[in-house]
Length: 340
Image (cartoon, rainbow, N blue to C red; front, side, top):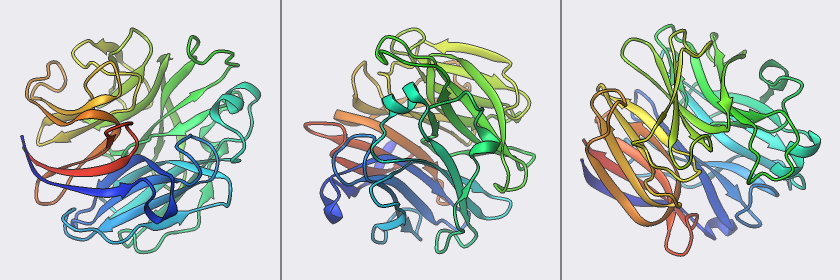
């Protein structure tokens, strides 16, 4: 692997926004790249006035337009942008979450306050969008409290099914640092993102996750976990996300408690995360045996770094969009283009 280009897409203070966080990215068959993120207006925290914004490229990620605000609701929180590219319909589907800005995750987990899930889509590669639709009743059990879509790109299976990886919790948390009854789970759509269903849920102490389609139409999901320390959890589904056939820990993927991303690139799995027990050392790794082992790796940023997402453009280049900085991981969001 080698870096072809590196560019700053979102920077703290840009457009008067305190912090940009939670990057996600997709690319269409016409080489349109959509880079989504949260615009956290007041501070870098997960609650308060948060909008979903994006930048759009028509040349595979070489150049981008201005920052566009897609979703905003005053002082409330619109977050966890989770895009899926429906290649069959050339449609971009975007899932996201809503809660009132004065309610943070701890409060929602404890008292069960509103945390709703919405979806919208674009059939012209991000130029225009449908009105958001609330799909909470379709994909959230009544006893689930916290809920988060992605945050990462979704997957399309051989049948055309769209899959988004999510996580939830369903019981009271007194100390989130010592008790973590969250679970990764799947939601899926068989009608190009119009209606949704709940799929498989993983074991407890799993959290933000990202899926990838293997050549035999298996779904592999790579998870943030507190299950066994600073490692990643993995589950395999043979029925496009409806049930889990295998769960294991990958001791070769060291990770802090942090989000990560994974894609299938010409039958190579490519994985991005902070390769450390701290949020630092953003690294991209390659597996040529579908995650059994990880061989080649490339450090993109040695300093503070956190969330990331991966995509492949139509020039067969890998795009990695990631949070990084000097003093803290959330100072900026950078896009790196890689040749593999």
